Length: 257
Image (tube, rainbow, N blue to C red; front, side, top):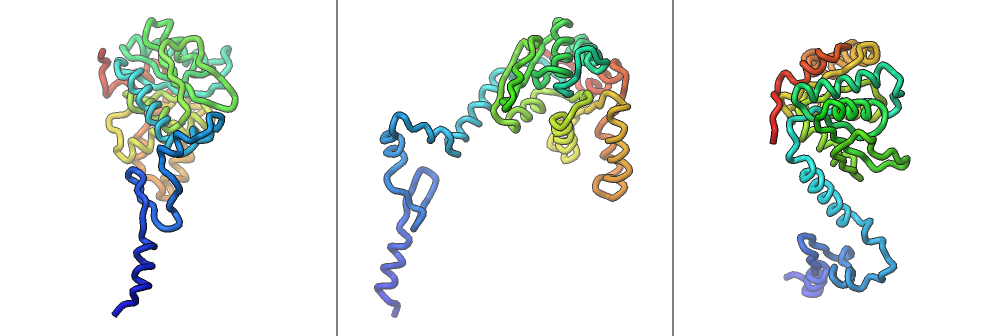
């Protein structure tokens, strides 16, 4: 027969605390209840708003706000590029022309809402009397939405913002840019490669800027078997505004909500 004292000790060890869907046992049990901790909190203690469960609510609220603001957009194209692009540069001028050409083709324009190439595309969309959207991000160095944005949403979380870029766009035009632009580009390429999204054209504008990256992908990544030759067909490279717009819009037609 078993040891009754040991069995009793085992039962005591399995005492559990249920906190909503969470079960805590043994040393992981917490004193009091969730309601008690909420109601007993000193009014000057705001640390609770930075805990992980509360962050989940913030994340949810960002998705809700983003979906609500963008749900009625017409067909759109997301345009990426450097925030550091000077206004007197050929790249800024190309951004304006691309934004206006996308509007003329019946599409809204979505950017990151910042200065530089993003501002240029928003400016082209606004001057073309189209829908100009900016999806901003909270950063240590404040940028703010550029003055050419007509619908703006600011996000705390990059992953929520990037979801909006993909969900509400039918394709990407990528102007020369830095790490943020590359992040958005490769996330889009990965989503298409893994078929998480379908019929999603991606156009890189500026052959001189992108040729080194394309050569590296072909001669190193593909050559070493880290990607397949067909992955190079997931994007197009051009210097022509009309061609860029035709390529990025060819697989989808404009529509209105």
